[in-house]
Length: 114
Length: 112
Image 1: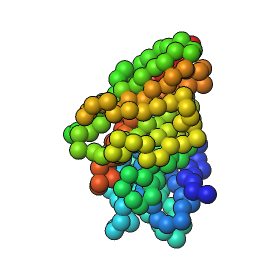
Image 2: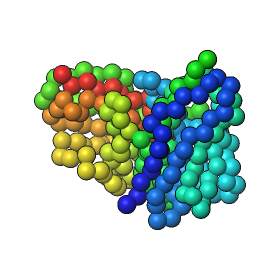
Image 3: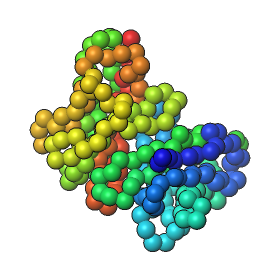
Image 4: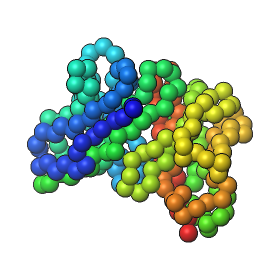
């Protein structure tokens, strides 16, 4: 069955430390891949997306993600976390055809301690 | 930057009442979606809409739900007889051919 897994429900990092949020997918073929961020009570903001090509994708707010086909993973990274990065992060995938729905992972809540 | 607009931002309704959630997708997008997020849970797909008809729906999207594009700009989600468990944040989204899925800021529905 198709699925998106974010194995970490909560992650706490110190301000200035590096961050990696994990995402694995299980699909028959490589899907399109996305990371979204959601602050409490807010909407979903796209951080970055991967369709094809270079497997290291740069996004907004200093985030990047690396697609690893062999591991079916699309992990989100940031070299130095800021307190304002505290939010919930969702990995999402869509099959490679225009109009296919996004399927979301369960999310990872990031806490930043000063 | 183009936005998806949702109204209202908050709605409180009595159990059993009908509600209509409204969305204005980005004008040149062709696929529209509704998603639901129950408090503290993941974002769940409800329905996708293309060319004035439903292209896919989830098992959540039962006969109590309907979608409509009543004119050239609005996209609505109707819940006919709300239940307590319909309380959630509802997100509208639209997408273009470059796979820019853009989400609205959501409507928080509270059923009392």
